[in-house]
Length: 545
Image 1 (cartoon, one colour):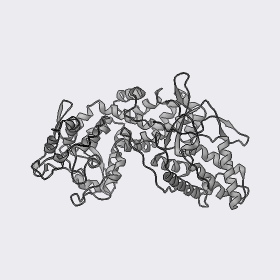
Image 2 (cartoon, rainbow, N blue to C red; image 1 turned 90 degrees about the vertical axis):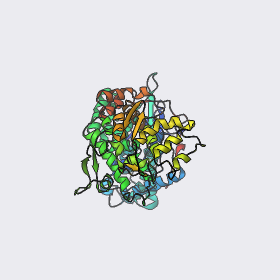
Image 3 (tube, rainbow, N blue to C red; image 1 turned 180 degrees about the horizontal axis):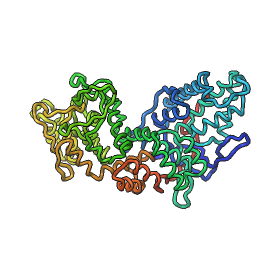
Image 4 (cartoon, rainbow, N blue to C red; image 1 turned 135 degrees about the horizontal axis):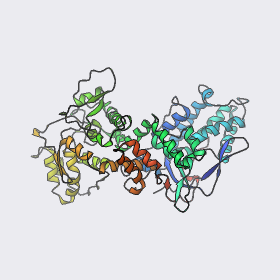
């Protein structure tokens, strides 16, 4: 369900008498989506526009995971009054830093005729410059005039030109035009709607770099280059070749693997003293380093993520992996021995600890999570009247979780789901709730054999090989990347929308760069749904100084 909001649709680039580039309204353009910026997107955008020295402090409202991806909720979330209050405070804090004496020489490109009086030309230059970057398109003539009027009014009131700029800039920063990625489309000649150039630039940049479009990408939008196949491919190749691709893909991988859920992970410190405060961020970083190395730096087969024994470790992780860490560096590459039982991302601390209980492992939680994340197969919510007593009776005659799950699965209402997810989790029972190796449970040797979809395997290594050869895994990666890029529910995405990208992915030997390029240069990538009706500025309240 799209936001039922109202904003002003805009279209063509023109020049006003002051020489400042602005947009003129065009009724033929339609708003088709509004995507609220995520916290990383907001922070990255501020850093890229104003510099990394700008401090961003405040609360960000969380997203909602839809179809396995938080990005899918960006098109249905608004800003609550509490959230807007936080955005307002952040906006003013950022504006104070930028217009303050310490940074104004670097960040304010013009000097007023008098620091105590309004200066229309200087203010217009300032707001035009930053409006383009914050709004990800040139400001309209009315928008520019409004910000200059506000700045001039505050200058007259306070007797300080830079205080006027502060309030005007704060207005830009708390505007829905910045806080939301507004996607505008034009009629595609009887073929529905297609995104206009600035919306294309924005979608490309936030997908690949996780931030606002840079100057070159905005120029490609202004000149119409992004509307041509050759121009689009040129910009896509440039974005793919940049080291900034790592930041964008880290954001995708974090969403894809649900690494953001680490904030809620807790473990019983008495039972697992190795789990300390630094463990969660270390485990998250290990997973991301592995993904970046395999997918981007080595341009490797994404299926190998299920089977590789190569990883990166630091001192905290070495304690769980029982590895002697005698290195000066914080992080070092490491390869587990063939008999270590470690294989792929499945046996890293992140995936094992996120989907377990505080005091014990959980084959069902692990199976449900990995089915959804890696195979795009969500598990139905269990009925409210399900009896979990057989599973929870850890001190009874059934010593292992396998025995307890088998007893629980005798319930016909539970068997179908458990038969689909438990084999995955049971094959990982050689690892405890924090990802440490183990061979026994309550004195009993742990059975890690499993049968899934007619195939029998044993342990994490067998599971990794099963997933490596399962065509549903790379197809799920393609589906989730499309969902992430377009802000749609992966469960509702039409496979034809990312077919070209998936075919390029498959033909390349499942290289991520090929999937990215195939996805964004396909004709379907910038197609859009019907416009949002009755557009106005009521979706988010704006504050007066």
